[in-house]
Length: 326
Ligand code: ES4
Ligand code: ZN
Image 1 (cartoon, rainbow, N blue to C red):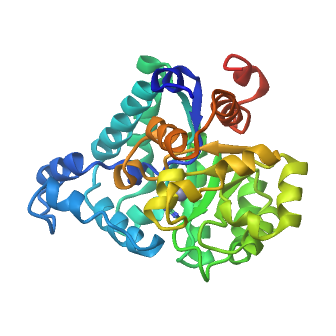
Image 2: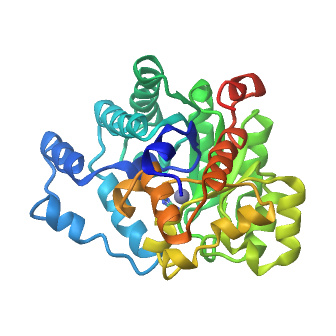
């Protein structure tokens, strides 16, 4: 089986990571202090101790609470920079992170301020760490489509900062078909589309994301196995799934890593990738996710190579940019 140094040395892209989910308790406390906010936890250990989740919603409640510590351009810069340094340590060569602008505009922080900090750090990451990046603006699906449209309209004048739109937050009861108009507007503006589907929601939500939102990747997608016809379609179309193993076990999508279906999907010919989702909350960055899959599912060297390769070919980099990593 591939040792950890081998997994680290593989050139890997991370395609499913929420920047707000990389806010480590240490930085959260530092930002709270800097911004004069009192957190409802006595210290870092108490906060980490609260990270026990029965489902997606229990996680999201803490994730939005934690994101309240982010106030200034510098806060968004520090958040993004810390993530990129973890990427460098894990052998990640390219990132396509999400940010959730609505989590911050509702608190009076303009998208321009969020983007100045995030983009500044991403540019520094390219210069100092050699990590390339493409940013994804993600809509919160528990809010209305009109709110998503207002968000897109605020962001479009800044569109040189991001290349795609996504859809995240509470999946059940908020199907992709609720967001057809805003995704059509995004496509019209030349943005690529991705969406979370089939994490807690049914296979039908994956089909809606493909047919109605015209996504180029499915985020999660592990519930595709409930429809054999859909699995055959994903294989035929070589539609990437950005799978998040530690997230799925922490949020009880799978009871145990030994029950995770990522390697079965890979062996069937589905274009799956490994990602960290919300690494500060789920116990590890990208390399830790590779290690967890290796240890629980006996991932082979060949499978590790295929997963890393899929992460490059499923990225939004063009063929010439991908070629350097293949
Ligand atoms: C998320 Cl794990 C997950 N699922 C859906 N939305 C999210 N936002 C941040 N993490
Ligand atoms: Zn996610």
